[in-house]
Image (cartoon, rainbow, N blue to C red):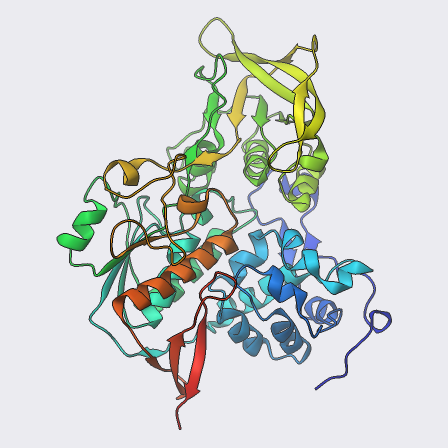
Length: 501
C-alpha cells in the first residue's frame, strides 16, 4: 500500500478542465466542458490524500468508494476504477457531469481545507466516459426469478431501481410517458451539459441486464397503479415519476402570450429538438429580450438555451443575491461568461400586456435581505416605492416544480399535503407492494439522491418479495453470490456476500 501523502507532496493547483470558448459555445449545443484526458486525470488523482476517515464517502449520497477509484486511476487501472464506482453508482458519466459535488463529496474533501478540493466529479466523469467508449459494463449471468416488477418513470430513480432489481433476477419493465427514456436527464438538461449519447449509453447498459422500456405510456391514463398489480401481473411496482409539474408565480399577466415555464422550454428544446426547427417541427416562440425568473440550475439551463436559440439578450431576475442563488457556482459562472445579464435582488410583481395579449414588460420591485427563512437563506423583503418596469418580450418562470398529480388522482396512494407520495423508511407506500422514491417523494433533489432512493426502494422490494442470495456469473468466468445489504445511511447497497470456489 502506498504511503500516505501530505498536502506538500501533492500538486497544489486543481487541474483545470478544458472548455469551449464562451462566445463560441453560446451559439451551439456542443458540450461546454470537454473533460480530462489521461494525463490530466492522472495529475488530479495524485492530489488525493486517501484519508483513513474518508469524509468524501460520507458526503456522497450513495457512498461511492471515492478513494478506492481514485487510487485505481493513479495505478492506471481505469477499468477497475469503473468497477469500483459501478458497485454503487449506475450512472458515473451522468453524475460526474451534473451532480453538485461542491455540496457533497468535494464539499467535505480534506484537501479542500487548505487548497481547492480534489475534482472528484471530473474524475468520475473521466472514468464513466472511458467505460462508455470501451464498453466496460459487465454483463453477468443472473439467476432468474419468476418475479415481475414494473417501474413507473425512467429518470435516475427509476433507472437505479431497475438495475438493482434486474441484478436480483426480476423481470423489469420501465414505463415512460415520453417517447424516449431518461426522464429529467433527457428533457430537463441540455446537451451542452449532458449529451444525449451519454444517456443512450446508460440506457443501453440497462437493456443488457434485461430491462425493458415501454415509452409513450402514461400510467394513470392507460392503466392505474392498482391495475399493474391486479391485471397486468406485476408482483411489485416502483414509482419514480419525479416532480416535473411547473410552478408559476400567480401574478397578474402570467397567462399572456410569451410567458412559459422552464419545463416547457427545456422539454421542447431538449427532447423535442426545437433547436433544429424547421427540421423538427416543434418551434419555441422565442422573444428577443428574454427574462428568466429564478436562479437555480434549471434557470441557468433555460437562460443558456434561449441564448443558443437566438435571443438577443437574456436576463436573470432573482429576488435574492448571488450568494443565495441555488444554482451550482460553475453554472452561474458559465452563464456570466456567455453574456447572461443578472439582476439580483429583483422580484416581478406583474407581467404587462402590449395591448395584443403578449408580453411587453414586467413590473418589478427591488428587494433587500432580511432575517433567514426556513431554508436558512435570508428572506427577501420588498423596498417600498422601488417598483419599475423591466422591458422584455418573453418571460420564463424557473421557480421550482411540484408533483405531477396524475398518479395521485388515479390511485388510492396516500399523499402528503404538498401532493407528494407518502412512504415509510423502506420507501413502501400505502398500497402493499408499491414503492416510490426520488422527487415524487422528497420534492426536487439531485440526480445522485434520486438514484440513492431508487436503490433503497429496490432493496425494500427485494425484501418484500422474499428474494435471497442472487448468483451472477460474469463474462470473464468470475462467479459470486450477492445479496442486498441493510441500509447504510438510508441508501441500499448491493454487497458481495461470499465468493464461490
